Structure formats: structure tokens, C-alpha cells
Amino acid sequence: MFQDRLLYFPEPASVAEMVSGGLSPWPSAPDFRGLLAEADRPARATAIIFHGNAGHAGHRQFYVGRLTRLGLRVILAEYPAYGPRAGELGEKSLVTDAEQTIALAHRMYGGPLLIIGESLGAGVAAAASARQRSAVAGLLLITPWDRLEHVAAHHYPWLPVQWLLHDRYDSVAHLASFGHPVLVAIAADDGIVPPQFGRALYAALGEPKRLAVIDGAGHNDWFGRLDDAWWRQATDFLLGAQAP
Image 1 (cartoon, helix red, strand yellow):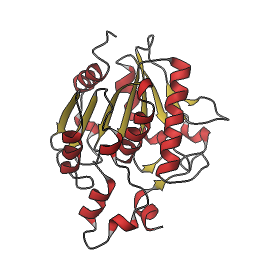
Image 2 (cartoon, rainbow, N blue to C red):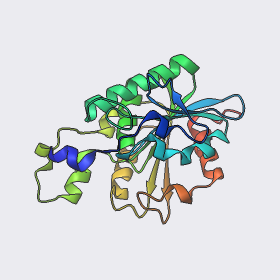
Image 3 (cartoon, helix red, strand yellow):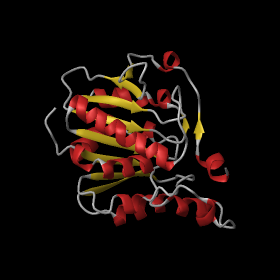
Image 4 (cartoon, helix red, strand yellow):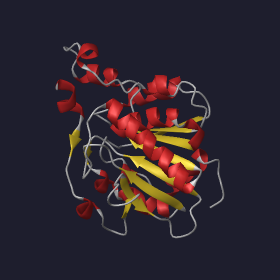
């Protein structure tokens, strides 16, 4: 209970409330797993976004314009117990479900798949991508940590967090032999997941990898500091500079 009250902040919403701005339920309304936005031309890849710990996938529509302009199909993945979805909170539930989402997208669209995770979603994306590594072309981790317990100990140094945490989200262990491009993007002024934890994750990764520091950005305002050129360079690195 201690962990869940600090880590998960789901917001309920109906499918109808989440579908707007050209987004459609994916793969369908009865079997809702997220929101889909198609590119305005034949997609060169599919990007799956795993969001942070608060709200729901419908709050992440800011990704759509940037990525569809680059020729990417976009899936805003939803977690169990978030938005309209039933299910349980927790690392096992979220990671298993994310793995299923990646596998389904690969069956439906083929490759390449670009996986993007922000904050908690970076931990989910790292674990699920490691399990589905043969289907994943590249991984973008935004404001990530190396291990959740390090972030918890930073904020609660007086608590025995290693015993209080049931969920670990150990991205260092999950990505130890990943073997695909990983871009770690950290917010220089992040007070929630301080930059040292993203740097520790980056240092532990094998090649190919790249580190991006978003100057002047905090944990929740980093997106407004990235332009189209940043996203193009990021996706070209992660997808092997495939022609749009």
C-alpha cells in the first residue's frame, strides 16, 4: 500500500472520453489497449508510447503531431487499471501487459517498432522491450531511472525502501544484454527523477547508445523544449536512419 500510493496515480476515463483529435481506439473499442494515430503517409515505423505514472494515455496526445510528421504510426499504450481498462496495478501486471501490446503491434504491423517510455513508462518499456527484443528496433527512455529503489532512497532517505518496495523496475538488469539502440533523455533540472539516475542507467548500457540532456527542463515540462529536429535525430538514430 505504501508503494502503490506513492507510485501509481491512475485516472479513470471512458473510451469515448479518450478518443478525440483523430485518435481511434486500438486495437478496437471492446478490446481497448490504447489510442492509435496513423501517419499522413505510409508509415516507416510504429512508435508505442508508455506514459508516466499519472493520468491516462489520452493525456499524451502531444506525441502525436511530432511523430506522425516523421512518418510514424503512433500507439499511445494504456496500462491496466488506467483510463477505461480493468486490471491490477504493479510491475508484474504493467510489464506483462506492455509485452503483450508490443507483440500485438508487431503481429499487426510488422517492424520496425520504436518503443518510447517516460518516467514510470521508461521502467515498463525497458522490461517489456527486453522480453520482446526480437520485435523492437530501438528504445527511447525519457526521464528514466536505473533502479526504482535508488530514486525512492533519494526522496525518503530515512526509510528502509528496499524492504518497502514490492516493485523494482530494475532497468539496468533488464537491458543488460538488450543489443539494440537506446537513447536516454534526461531533464537537466528534474527534481522527481534527478539526472544522476538517468546517467547511471546510460553508463550501464551497452552500445549502441546515446545520451541526450534537455537543458532547463524539469520532469514534467521537457516536451516543450524539444523541436522537430530533435525528434528527427532521435528517431533516425533509433531506427537506423531509415529513409522516410
